[in-house]
Length: 332
Image 1: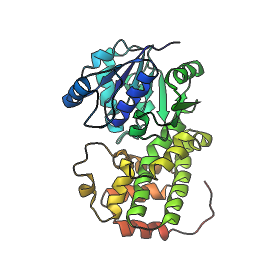
Image 2: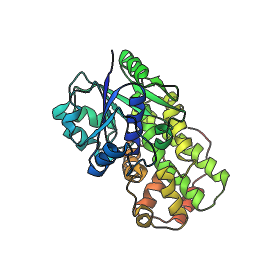
Image 3: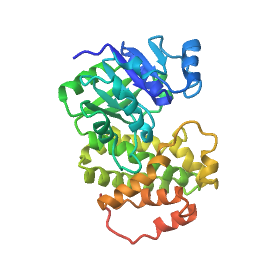
Image 4: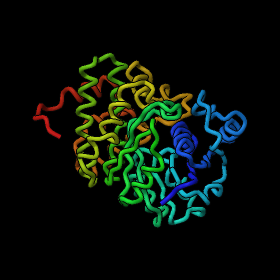
């Protein structure tokens, strides 16, 4: 199985960075963008000024607004915001070929349906073969060629190995897994937990509290993944624990920076104002809370974060609610 061309749907920061990864791997890349200024910027200056400024893009990347331009690609990477995945895949459906694998690179749970992205794909393109790419990676660092490692989950071992061989490079190291649900669950929840960690930082509650949120948040992540049918071992890897540590440790994370602003006293509306890129945790938090309730999974940090984002409590109220929970044994 050999891939020569790749189509990347979604020209945000992460989609553009993955287009760089594909180009460095020797693929001819078509990057689909909705924004005409992004297409013009890449064509004229080889840079995505709107979403990934300061990074010169490989000449093998061609930008287009036309989904039909992806029809002949051997490989598709789908990178729209999670809440737009269904509409994006539906728009691509007339140009999809059943033999072309689709690598899902967006992290989140669909609001309303409470579906993971693999479920959204199976409903919009039922003949497509799915893979999931997830792990600790900031788009600007990956695009610049700094070292990173991610999880590539695929149920078909032969296809998974072919994708692994295609996308790997000295500075971009994917590890193969067969647990798509575990890979997705980690990526979906870590954004919500990063908002909680940002609040801790913004409120100056200290490093001990920060470590506690990461650790107990990881327990919530594991419980959710297992309840969905994933494996705890997957969540303990790059797509779960690794992504959680990165996203919860730097204001480079859009989700942590949102929490930081909230902890410093801004309202949700003030914190989101003027932001062009999506803080996926804000979009996914209500779905995470609803899914936890549906599955009967205890997730107090995610639940109180969702309540705060919905205006149902304050920062101080959220902190008090977590600290006043009944004492209990520590377990996953």
